[in-house]
Length: 318
Image 1 (tube, helix red, strand yellow):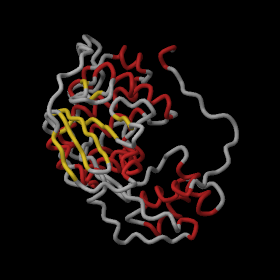
Image 2 (tube, one colour):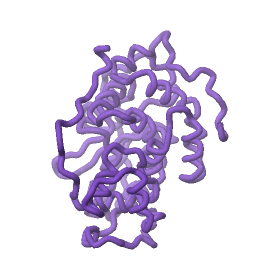
Image 3 (cartoon, one colour):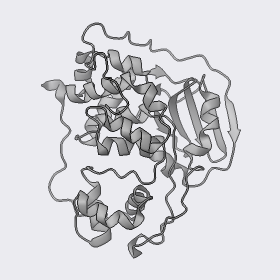
Image 4 (cartoon, helix red, strand yellow):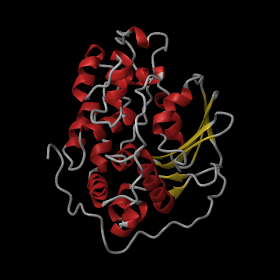
């Protein structure tokens, strides 16, 4: 499997469920702080790491402050980002503050990006941040496979509230940290069903959890792409979604997305496109094709909606 050995048993365990964590708030702990200039577009750069309006790992306050949780190599942590820098709590606090510039796009290399379509001029150059964490991007990406966003976000929210750990520090009420990969391997079939995720997506996440350490240790985006796509249930779209967030890959195009090709085609040519046509249109941006897609989204140009929106399915009633 191109560097990945088969999991001992990739199916979700059907015996005892992991014991739900107690619903108690952790004791207040001292914050670590890092001062740095945060750009005015920090909310847009951090936005791709939010999964739905009630994501337990993400919160945006009325004053623009953004809170997010992360399971770092040192343990769970909570990060608070303001215009003046960041504060962090928990065992992963130091790691979060060390990686904060990268999260905000400081390591994003925009050299070589040239706008080739007049319709894209005047919107600046979209920055891309990186988290350095694979599994926290992989789980929601798998949950979002071939379903409407509301359905995937509901499952993500349910699973985090049941199996996630309370966010360290004075995080907003209800924030959780994604559980460790071994917890995902043990979630029983009935809880996947309660979350609204069918067996295919559950097996894909359980399989990936067996290989989480190797995925996290990938040397670069290309290596991670090979490892991810060697796993059953993970294809081009899922790999791109993960690498955009983990590595800040400016060229990882979400081929196979339900809406993206139509949006790109409409913005650049005035007509809808399929994936093949989208890639042809993006070819002048090779090396920055994902960045070009972000720029297209900034224009707000979208094909007119025709017909009702797709409903969110509920596997819990099946």
